[in-house]
Image (cartoon, rainbow, N blue to C red):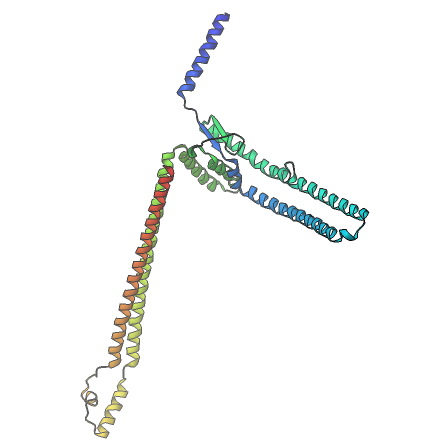
Length: 339
């Protein structure tokens, strides 16, 4: 019976070992310092603690200044003082120095208030991080997850095994969920599912990045076309306004029929038969010089608008080309970094 039990036990060990060999071990790591720096609550609390630390430093500097003042005063008056007075002042200075050093050690020592308060601030966030790490490990079948910022020495760490950003997303999701409606919560869950799929498949992350870049380029092209259409529409409106203004000016500058009759009667009375009077007697319409000037002005305005549109189009094309070169440089840089 004992031999049979031992045989079964050895068989189970062999089965577990073979199963472990067939399954790939999954290892990840986090950077606790990086996570804490990207948690808003921790950053705000750290900023308040930093203000308190600055106040402690100012108090220490004030104590040092008082001590230095006493030392300088003793040095200047030492020749005039008795040995008892000198000893008394030196004792006072030594007492103040010890008090200042004790205060400095109390606030900034290895077991001081600053260290304790930093630990107290980080403790709740660290607990949330540990919970998030456990959830990620269980959901994605991680075997080991290390902390890069701990005492564990990591001689090399591949970025693709870093799950710090996933932990930050989990922490942010927890904060957001409390403020979302049912519809927003459903959309958030769909977004989380997509992010998890991208985390599981690095190739999908690259494809998503390429899609985002194409989308940004397409939106930029649409925006450029919209600006160009707006420029053309503005030019058309300006030309139309100029034509209407010219017609209105012509209409206001036309000589009315009573005025023509008066002009003709004056010509008959004075007996003038020059070229300017002939159109009035024969009914012909004289060529108006203002109309010629208006036509020239309209032509100049049209050429000016055409020139402005061409310059604007060239500027848009230059901006688009610059954006394209910048995107290509960024893509090349990203590929170099990944390689």
